[in-house]
Image (tube, rainbow, N blue to C red; front, side, top):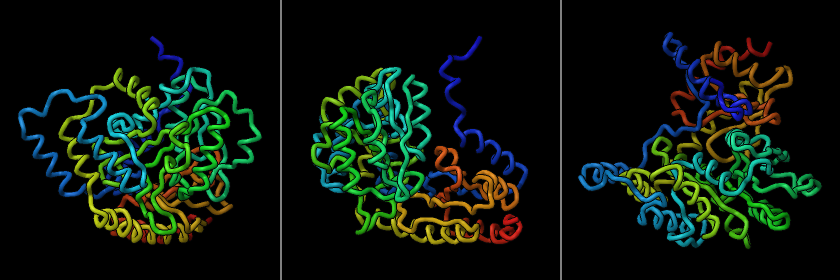
Length: 391
């Protein structure tokens, strides 16, 4: 037997492979500190957990649920968008709950892109935009980001975009931390409308380190955005629920109906307890978000900056989101040379930027999903070998 030919177009996900190595090292007693993955280490709100427990104890809540999500969850998602981004959504037809936004990348691509048609993905950018597009037979074209992490619109306008069906965007951007900007969203909508393709904006980081200068934004706030955009959001980062697998896709009624047609043929809906608990999470008070999405990450960010400086890396101080992105010193061949030495000599696992595309080859990414004690320990370990790894 041979595997399907589509598997020749992708490789195993970097973290899937690398985490096995880290697990082996930990089994050998090496105590690796992981600053690699964006999986929050803090719990959801008490109301979220209490709701899950209450619903799980009931005898009438364990059957199949609607693929389109419970009315309670859709209404909570619509209220969240109104409260957070000032966007009015019809919960009956403009909101679709997802089993995590990664699932949504598959559904959106299936709904809008035929085999052989073109998908635009950012470089650097989330690897799944590329890998799923290739698995589905789409033609992937990358687009570069400027030094500020925003798209190079002049370069995009110089291209032949007639075969483009879908463009992936992601702000606050992962991995560069570039903040969302209203001007960028307005220009993206204009680009999509003038070239007749769909923008899919991936927006899971908008609450992390948001402030007055860089507030939480949605692309749907741009004029006429609903005509050409869908947006995915997630409770994984902003509500400390990455393992719960709850996300959402929002957009106009027609687009959502197409995505639902795909989704209904793939899954059977999330457990009711998780859906109602997610609805409770979406009602978290602003004070909860300020503590968990700003104060905690701000303290961790300062330690991550110290690590970057110790390694001789440079970084943009305006970054927001769950990571810190830095450029390595010139004497390294590439980022993986540095991250491998950190893993094996300092026992600290940091992500090399090449996994996000060729334009990340000279960058590293530090996750803020480790408590301050672990970050302090990682900093001390790196300080202990910093002079050695410079040579």
